[in-house]
Structures are given as C-alpha cells and as structure tokens.
Image 1: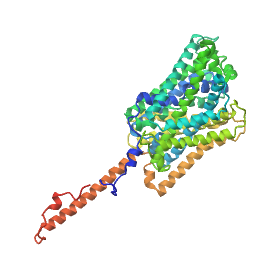
Image 2 (image 1 turned 90 degrees about the horizontal axis):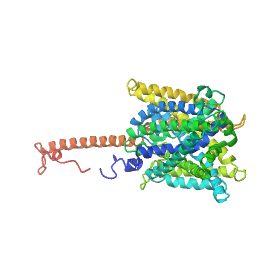
Image 3 (image 1 turned 180 degrees about the horizontal axis):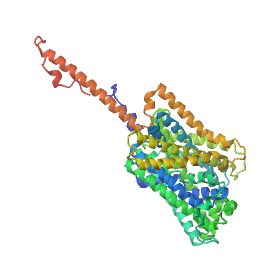
Image 4 (image 1 turned 90 degrees about the vertical axis):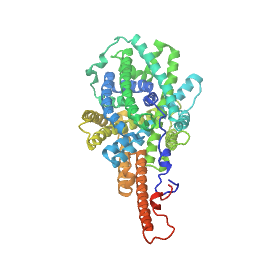
Length: 547
C-alpha cells in the first residue's frame, strides 16, 4: 500500500502504539510484581503498625483469610487476562465487562490510585535514606533531598527496557526475602517467653473494634499481584504467564506474610506483641533482630530496607507509566502519551509524566514542611500515610468493580455456565472486597492518623470519588461526541488492528469494484464496434494498479 493512501493505518498505531513483546517472562514478571509489595517494608511497617495501632493479635490469621479472598479474586481476574491483553489492566477489564463509560471512570481511578501509592513512597524513602546518611556517615540532610534524587533516578529507569527494570527489581527483592528469612528463622530459634505459640491463629484473636481497619492495612500488604496484567503486552505468552504469576504472587504473599507476622509475635510473645510494637514502632524488627543476629546484620537490614522501598517505587512507577500509555493510546489522555520509545520500547512519555507529577508533589510537601530535620511528620506521617492509604482505597474499589466486570464479560459472551465456578469465585471475592472497602472509608481517619472530626477523613477518600466522577463524565462526553473513541476503550492495540483489518477490507472492496468496472469496460471494448487497437480482455488480465 503506498504511503499516503487514504486507507493506510499509519505505523504509529501499530509498532509505536504497542509495547515491545517478549521482554519479560514468568520469573521477571513475578519479581516485578512482588517488588511492589516491598516485603521488608510490609513486615517492618504494615505488620508492626497493625499490631501497634489496632491491637489485633490474630494478624497472621488475617493474612491467611485475605490470602483466600485474593486467590478467589485471582480466579476470575486471571481468566479475564487470557482474553484481554492490555496495559490498561483494571480499566480495560472493566470496560470490556461493564462498558466504555465505566472503563473511562476506572481508568482515572487507577491512574490516581497508583500515582498516589508511588508518590507516597517517596516520603518514607527520603526520611529513611536521610537517617542512613546520618547513622553511617554523620551527614545531616533534609528528607526531600534524597526524595528528589530518587524521583529523577526512578524516572530515568522507568524509560528504559522493562527487562532491565525487572533485573534491578529482582535482585533487590531476592536480597529482601533472604534477609527476612534469616530473621524469621532467628525468631523461631529464639522465641519469646511463650515459645512457638500458635495463639495468633485462634479466631478469637480477631475480635475488637480495630478489625476493619486492620483488614485495610493487611490488604495493603498484598498490593502488587494485581499489576501482572499491566505487563501482558510485554510478556512472551500473556495467556499463561500473567495468570501463573498472579497465583504465585498471591500464594507467596499469603504464606510469607502470615509466617512473618506470626514469628514477630513469637519473638515477643503473643501477650506482649502489641505493647512491644507500641514501644518500638517500625523499629521493632530491628530491635528484635539485633540481640539475636548482631549489630552488623541489623545495619545491613537497614540498608536493604531502604533499597526495598526504592524497588517498590520503581515497580509502581512502571505501572503508572503503562496506565498513562494505555489511556493515551485509546484517546482518554493526549495521544502523545500513547507512543513508546523507539530505543527501549517502553512508554517513555508516560514515565516522564509520572516523574513530573512526583516531583511537584514532593516539592509541595517539602515547601510546607515546617518540622526540624529528622522529624518524620511531613514525609512519613503525611506524604507516605496519605498517599499509601489513598492509593490502597482506590485499588480496593477497582478490585471490587473488576469482579463485577468479570461476571458481566463472560455472561454477555454466553459463557456463564461454562465459567460458573470462576464467576462464583469472583462474586464471593467481590462481596468480601466491598466489606473491606466500606471499613476503609468508614475508618479512613484512623488509617491516616487524622484527629476526630478532621476534614482529612472525608477529603482524601473524596479524591478517589472525584477521579471516578471525572472519568465517568468524560466517558459520557466521548460517547456523545466521539463514539469511535468511546468504542475502543479497553481494546488497546487490538482496536487499531481491527481498524486496519476494516480498512484493508474496504480497500479490497474498492479494488474489487474497480476490477469489475475495468472488466465491464474491457468487454465493451472487445464488442463489435470497439475502437481499433484496443486489446480485448485487458481489464481482466491485468491488475488495476500496483498497491
């Protein structure tokens, strides 16, 4: 087809609008999604905070229960991933199940939620990195200096090949896991005064007013596995790799976190874990590890605690960049975001956008920080806590909606009976996630440490609601004014392949009509009375022109 043909589908809707395939396999994808959960940060931060603030001794049982819920969610979600390969993941699935308008709403929620998660982590990273510089080198810096440097480094890595990112994330994750295994074994070998007690797995330990909020904290520990479909276009066999990685990630997280939270209680004694967490805070793990493993191990643990935070930032950054890319490709954001880098095949402009947003947020918190250097108020208690819980709230809402979308997708395709088991699993998971979502909204003030009557209790959750409303309204506008854009929401590069096939079909029909016309003319030329010198049948023997 010649350049400039009216039926041509230009390559920017093909190669440049598709992420590079075969970049990442099962090991690389598994390491990438697990890195998002930052296991060491989850153990030292999420688990200890849950003991400290909620007083729920049965946290290990909570991880087991939520592991079952996440596995049920993954049953339908993984099956959906076999049918839809799109970097838009959540919003693509919701669009395919519940329609383009719902998909548009979900796209803005996903972008806001993952952006909040990623940006929030810069707060704790900056504070912890600054603390490391003070401890080991005697250098005093404000938290936002390492945070800004991390923003720039993460942005640079995010624009590179995903397989390189996977290697960086994989190395950091494996070191984190190895360190956690070491101190878990030390806690088991030298338990507290009550020995290897299984009291934490007694259902009676889940009682108390803090259960709902503890559920929200525990869900945050699982976040990451649901990102696997975001990389579907970049895997070698998306139909099998994505589903496999999700189940492996859920299984690993449930078992690993249940064991680690149990052994923290073992090290202190189940009757003392809440008091110990209240006294030491996030430093509890280090306080328990040092007498058992020595100061050198604790120092190494501090270093890789910080590198694990960085790995989590990079993982979430990659997800946000791909959501921006998918939305740009489908017309939900400026088209420039839907192009990939020729050098790396990565969504470089999406990565740049997230870098700019992160930089602006970090600078805003730095400017408004009036606390002395070394005070965690702004970076940890505001930036990290607000961003992390806001993002988790959005992801929980997306997961619950995705369950409904999975059911609708297969029922509309006439596969409801064939997929009955998976749809039941999706329904059960969706109901459980709705319960967690209600608790998260109700207790959001507790989650972010806001005082009674604080506007933060409703203002921050309202941001997720606002993102949903903006997306839904935009979806309705697109449906009324640009139906062709609305129709391709959730289709990803598949939409352009369909458009190319339609254009090729139209070109073929036009060529056929031209051939028929030429044949008719040739018949007329060869009939009695035709002009001398005309070659009979020329229009049937020769093509009408070279394409």
